[in-house]
Image (cartoon, rainbow, N blue to C red; front, side, top):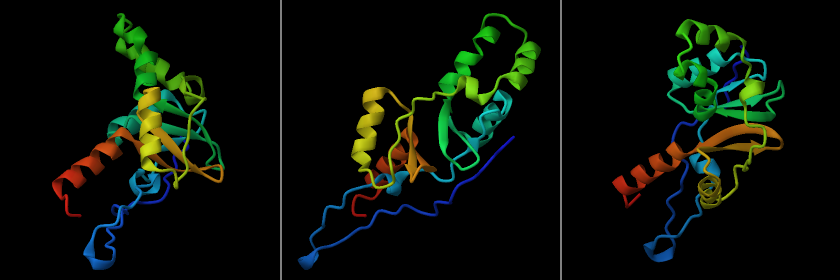
Length: 168
């Protein structure tokens, strides 16, 4: 399995600026302020069982498929995994499905036509893209290289933090 980890987010990176006289200044929230890093990635020939394990262990719903240079090739979502398991839902023995999961490769499951954003994209634009297309995530790419992932969970976490401390 080709597993790579990118970067490390230590804290939210949303500045709280005050103008002259102490009034609050509106700061545009960017994707870089919300995106998840590190991103769990695998190579295109990684078996489905490795993707399932990453999702379960990391409590995540998306795994990026990248080449050796960290260029995004596609994304496997939890929905893709569920679709691949339809045989087991119809009565195929679990042992058979587990065996098949060893041979199904990421490149056969992944969504290849993936919309991406860059770190300086306004967060609102990313959220609107996700909503209008029914995406659970949007990969963040800079100079052709995957640098993060912005997910529904990132937006929910930001909302929770903002609503918990409105003065921040």
